[in-house]
Image 1 (tube, one colour):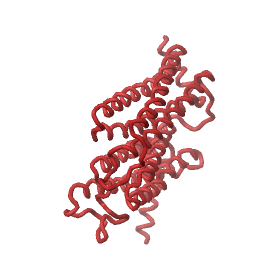
Image 2 (image 1 turned 90 degrees about the vertical axis):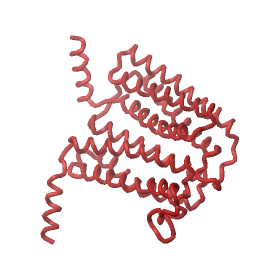
Image 3 (image 1 turned 30 degrees about the horizontal axis):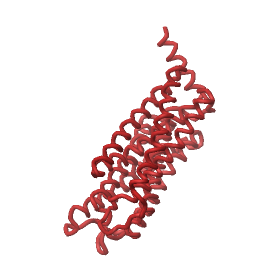
Image 4 (image 1 turned 45 degrees about the horizontal axis):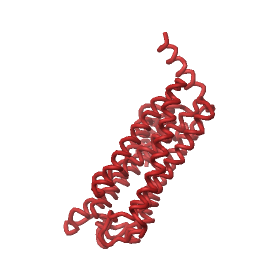
Amino acid sequence: MNAITQAARRFWNWLPTGVDRRVRVAAWLNLVAQTILVGTGGAVRLTGSGLGCPTWPRCTAESFISTPEMGIHGVIEFGNRTLFFVLQVIALAALFFVLKYRRQRRDLFILTLIPACSVLFQAVVGGITVLSGLNPYVVGLHFVLSVVLVSLGAVLVYRVYNGNGIRTRVVPKWYAITAHITSFFVAVTVIIGIITTGSGPHAGDSGAARNGLDSELLQHFHAWPAYVTFALTLVLVAGAWALTLEPMRRVVVALLVVELVQIGVGLAQARMGLPEILVGLHMVLACVLAAVMTVVVLSLKATASVRQENASAEAVTVS
């Protein structure tokens, strides 16, 4: 017992007392892993492996892992389940890395506690998805949760770099309103996209039900808010340049680039009959879009220290 106590004490002493490289790496790993999980989940669905492990929490009635008889579908589904545990380890590591200064950085504590708890919740929703026979609405809920967790991962990354002081708006009011409206249309686009996917051919299994809605009509409903988002983003980019808003320029340009790629992939998949690789890429890009949009909204405000750093950088540039 003494050895265990000493090991625990050494571990506690090793934990950071403030934001350092370990914290930043853990934050990035959480964001990347949450996004990768969407990609592997998409692979499960797009390869028809949604019921590769036909039950939950076991993969079969007798085994927690896939068996050779289950073939590639069992391997793909089990691989996606395994990633949940990897993500749980990363989330717990991030939580441990903020424990010592949780009172000073309550924001980081909450942002690391949520994924540490929600990974298991996601696993349960994934289990319900399997047990419901891949009900398209349950599958859609699974994806919505993933988008939310990716967005919160982006908040965590932003926070470890920008502190938690009093934040004030650093852009004109009209610009902030435009950014918030843009974020609303991003959310609408993603949600309609999820419903559209639920009406399409990629059910995750040949016997899985679809939502019965008109796919062609939904594609148009999905495209309209996407184009509104793109138009509003052009306004944000033009405004950032005209008003010399730093570092807003970088994040809105990143948002514009993601949207251009996403629109291109969306148009291509619609014209090519929804090939699996493009549908999967479209899903991952939806999460990337949500993450970047989150950073854009966060960048509308800044702490006093960040504003001072930006002002100093601008002064150096001018001189």
